[in-house]
Length: 311
Image 1 (cartoon, one colour):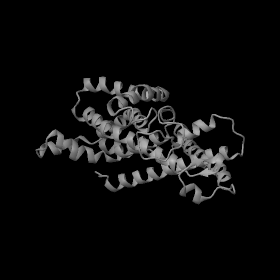
Image 2 (cartoon, one colour):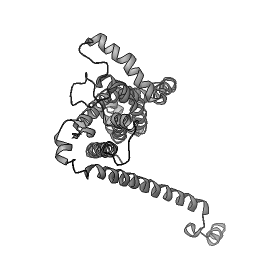
Image 3 (cartoon, helix red, strand yellow):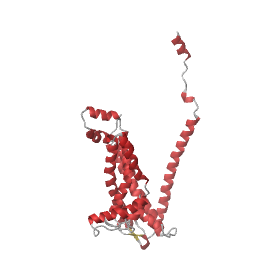
Image 4 (spheres, one colour):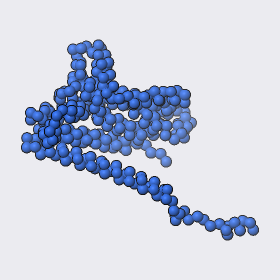
């Protein structure tokens, strides 16, 4: 009797028609934030392309000179972009060769091997590196790393300004980014995957490398993408330690100027609007944007291709 009464009096709530002004406001703010981010991105690309177009519209500039020559001095009619591109890629490659294995190893240790007490001590110490100003890294590369390399390899073999020391220190700078994001990705792997591996007789190392690492590949890929973008866009370290003149070379022991270093050096002088030196800055920036975009697309394709999904 009591159950029948309860069933008759029960009226389910119609949640869809209930007004939720707070949730509506939050949804609106999130929508506005998304739209603003798109508008800002489109505006940046538009302004960059518009100013870069002034450079390419110059009668003396051709795509053949831009992509087919290896000397960059727009003021005297030399428009080959490759010295700046190769030095940027070389310093970024050196940085990733340092930061990627060290960052992944540190992240794997913190996630799979370190005790909670050790993790609470080591992770903040590692992340302190992310708070150091990049100009400090630049002088560290110039005043400590370069003399150290010269003492090992010989002063005649490595120049005072060189791409190797700049790349090495950039790798140290990116290390906290790679390790922190990768450690978060490792920690997000479902625990039943580890327990299943242990139940099958796998060791901790086998579980870490053959189960946890593939499962966290999407997060690791995001860390790598951000690391590459950070390395390519870094300015102060390469401006201080890599050199201040375009040099088409693949020798990391020599000085060479990167795209960001060239923009920082040229924009610090007196430039008149519309001059070839002024518009060349936007051409370099557009090239920097395209290189970063291409590397990001390639990295995303690799992550999507080899990512393992679990239900």
